[in-house]
Image (cartoon, rainbow, N blue to C red):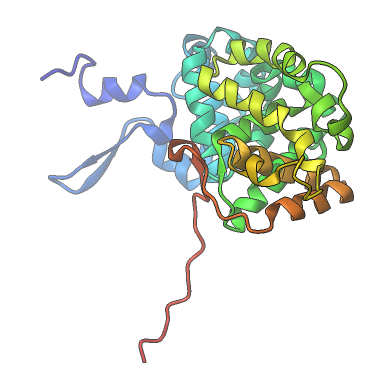
Length: 306
């Protein structure tokens, strides 16, 4: 009785994509499809309902969702939908930053972030969504997303999830923003001169504010990047206090980023450092709400009861 959107046919016309506007009639056990969504599912296609030019201007977040669905479902974007995304991608600046950050976290939690980011890159959405990170990275020089510095980090991160590692949404944010603070993430980060906290805050703040990253996540990002130089300190001497460092609330996420970045850039010294710190690592992320795991876990072989 609270439905203010008309009958089912009128309600279907208000939705974003045809695949999201299909009804099931439980009484007659049949599909009700006013928008030809079943055909789009059969043809593995994402199609905007109505005029995509109007739809995407009314709600720019729909462009992000179209790319996300195409990536996760292995569907293609309908040519009119793709054309409209490329034409109106600049409208993303008008989208609610709160809704966007919510969508990012949903994507990270799928365990298939690389696939989604590749479609973002191919449609031009990535540059609109993460403009500061793009400017600081080498993304413009690479046609393929996974060949860029950001893409290489995503490749490693998703591989780690497949291998049953545990990451967090904040680590994934760090993968995107890391090129903004290159001075503290390279192999020689432990030799950084100057006020490292001021450097990291100054570099990250504009992007974090525009993206509406929550204060607690912003502070954790700063801690992650400030800690990178510590991982080059392999000595077990008391002055480096590795045991104390391991107990820090930000250690787990800092280490995971360090390991991903080391593997992504192929830095053998950094990889060896990561192996040192990983020895005996038996801890979980500090905040369960941030945890990212594989979306489609591998099936275990059924054991013979006999």
